[in-house]
Image 1: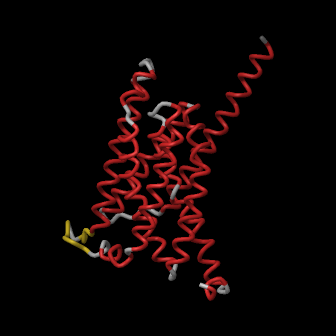
Image 2 (image 1 turned 90 degrees about the vertical axis):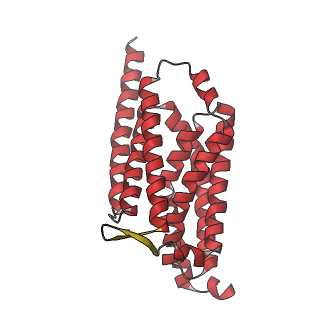
Image 3 (image 1 turned 180 degrees about the vertical axis):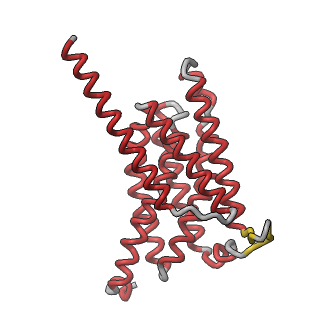
Length: 244
């Protein structure tokens, strides 16, 4: 351990891997925020905390079983010349779940705007929301851990990077969730991101890799445009208030 503390390469791996883990966790934060918003206000923060705690536990368990994680990349069978591994199956199922969940949430948001919000939230239970968060955590954790194993050589570096990234995500989940809940257009944009991530997961599982940089650029650009729209809307509201 002391050798690692004195190794500049280990510190560089830690910084790089931590930054990458935080970036890979963006879609996880969005999903957790949207799912938690279905609960009563006093349960939302706890749901986010439990969801991220489960994500941390899942990542640490996967890191502790690196040998088993490595077997997930071995082909189990072939479809049209493409070897499908255990990792591919998990990504495909996770992507399909995201597509189904994102579509259902968009439909509910568009068609259910006139429904009583209290009654709608009563349908969602704390355990049900946490269970759905846990399912997607497994998919996101698997992709994250495989990336960590490929970038770092020491388990201590991987665990430290994951813990730091999860701490940052825990701090950011509350403000992100509250912001998404306050703005309907932002929620629709976030749901669209989940559909995009779902398509990318299914494509990756089928052997069509979409570089994450393209996805995150699209997300960042869309978020920038929406930020400008919110700023413009705020200015118009203040101008009307001043004139009135």
